[in-house]
Length: 261
View (cartoon, rainbow, N blue to C red):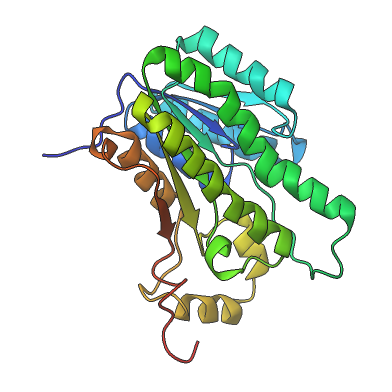
């Protein structure tokens, strides 16, 4: 029987307490990895954070959480330093921090744009920069940048969000060109219609949700576990020959919506 085995690997998920990030944390832990993840420290999500940690530890998984402002390079570096001190290495980085606020171009202020750059792009750069040297010293690693189908279809509700997620492809290509020969493999995972808290709020009306599902060729919404399983596959030995890719996880919606939707 073929299984995905990450035993002995150490993963760091930047933005891992809820939604897609939590799905990745759970899947990595289930596959045997030691997993560290960051969260904002927002008291509003303390119950979710506690439930995630309790669940994983009850299953015997090695999971550690760190409060971190991912828009602050020093805080991100501090988390990386702590993970290295705790586990001795970082084999896998998932840069998952992001925020999407629907608004028109004309309603987007300079401050909105700068904030979007900070949270959707700079946070990824800070995380990548912090792990590159440890990965080089260890002889390799895997980096996953979490994008969005907005990079392809301009969706998501705002120009700045689509632009920042599209920019991740350029970051990935640079990393591929300069570090894949050093065994650091980078890919971008682009989720779409994943049933997170944000999607549940936007489509709280049952009819709207039904209409959304009708736009997905496979006939259902995605789950955070769908993203986690792909990331775990790519992080395992099965992903040794896959790098420099942008992979849509969207049930076919982005390019193959059923006629009439």
